[in-house]
Image: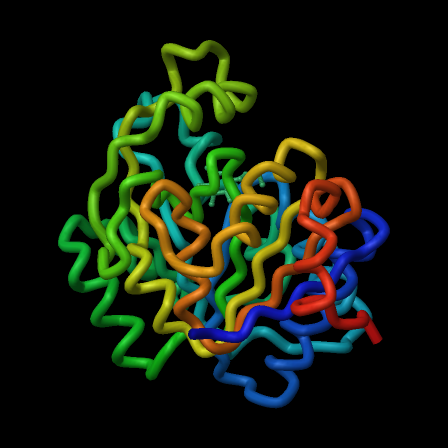
Length: 259
Ligand code: GLP
């Protein structure tokens, strides 16, 4: 059984402060770090703060390698702005000294398009392992695009998106019809091989998944996030709203202070 450390922050800003500090500290200790990165709304503040620290010369990122969790498939040709590759360029890569050739997505290895997903996994292995994997959380409990029903040992593969994910992600698209129905995602097995995992989540929309996670302290396929019970070094960094439904008796077992 793994060890979960829960940190409850006041708000999104505090979450971003802490997550960015953990990532920057790692890179300052190991300049060739392997960073597992996520997309969505949740990590935007974390990336902003990493950019701030880079601009203040508090960190140099030119030797890091990045591995993104997932990418859409079947995006319309004129919809590149909804790709996670575009998101990462906009929200982090182009604003720091991260080198494009050291950025890896399941569908893009450096500058080369890829559709052999075992090669993406091989890249991770080539550089050792992911030092820190940053994760957001879907309202249905997904991590990456591992939807409910994903097995604990899944690897990077094509996945069908759950209807709830399509509905939730439609806010980023012109219409619901434009949301891809498929994606490529690191598997739960891939994610669990990271050295350390940081899951960040805020807002009451995430509170049900968080409550379910703490209600059963083991993996169950209907809540992909629960795979994290099988890992030894997980930080769950959430705000008070996302934490609001956790059974109070559970809190003291996992809660640690944000020093
Ligand atoms: C998408 C991504 C996930 C992300 C989730 C939550 O579905 N594939 O990796 O964690 O959205 O997104 P948000 O942070 O916008 O709530």
